[in-house]
Length: 418
Ligand SMILES: C[S@@+](CC[C@H](N)C(=O)[O-])C[C@H]1O[C@@H](n2cnc3c(N)ncnc32)[C@H](O)[C@@H]1O
Ligand code: SF4
Picture 1 (cartoon, rainbow, N blue to C red):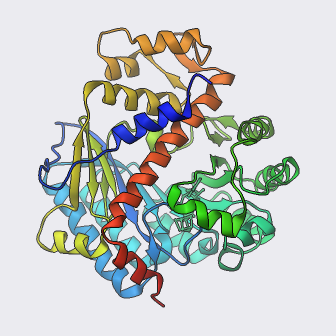
Picture 2: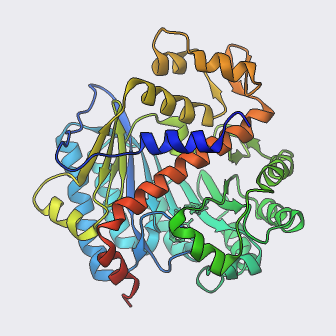
């Protein structure tokens, strides 16, 4: 395979090797520009065995302190002159404490000219009170983590008791149909024990629930999650990944159009994953990343340290990493083609006026083709890009593990909170 996983891993590790805390840069907004604001809520009712995102078991007191610090950081970005047009609230589970989330979104609406708000949630929060509260603050995209409708899979993931059976989840999804401009469902494929028949049933139940958008992520495993996944869910293998992906492309093609390598939308114009539409973003909250003007920034992964930083009227940033030109180009091409096509204007913003040799190589190897003035991923290229993107995101997962290593005791303590 041209897109060798080892090489991709090396590139991701290189891109994500952050320095120490000594040389911090201050983010500066470009004049007259609106950015995407990513807001991280690191709390969940229960921790899923496969998940490497930054999250701890929910604790009400810690969450109250945390949301206070989060709002202080949002105000600090307003004072630095940033404006945001779009907001993405991810987690963890952003809907674990609705009053705190509502006052955070109300603040964001007061401070900035917001056009769209996306919020991630879990199926147990798909009730009328939660939906109404979110709609009242202008949330127009709700992204629900389902992973699978198969009760045996949900049980192995520890999600059956917490979030309900496949049939219950399906009924709750149908219950919120039409309320938000976009309802996205997150699914995971290539789960241990998955077969063509169980994946086919997952696709059928997803389509029957009537949702407008679905994201199918390949299961990503880090060294830190591998043993827990093996113990709880079974042995992970990449052997069937490509065949399962082709099955998904086929199964979704009758009703939904691909809007990124792993996202499928009923209408082409719905609100998509933030990485597709925004090449630069500001992340607030513990464990959030920002990417601005060729620099990656990472906020503290210690919730207590994050709280201290914001009490001292600082930002939450504790690491930063200016990318070299080739790294910026690699990242720009990776995230740009993840949205399936690249226009001449996008290419210019990645490469300037120099013609990118990388595109020549990708064309020669049949990964991209030129159609109507656009560079598009071919059918073969889509799977290659799914591999490239999942390797990069797994690099981000590894980085999260590293950044959490020094707060190991805090994370362990949170696992034993009631
Ligand atoms: C980090 S969660 C946050 C939202 C919510 N807590 C949930 O479970 O959906 C967002 C999505 O990331 C995906 N995800 C998390 N860990 C993953 C992994 N190891 N491999 C593939 N997808 C993963 C799941 O589909 C999940 O729904
Ligand atoms: S998948 Fe979602 S619910 Fe599960 S631990 Fe990760 S963030 Fe929490």
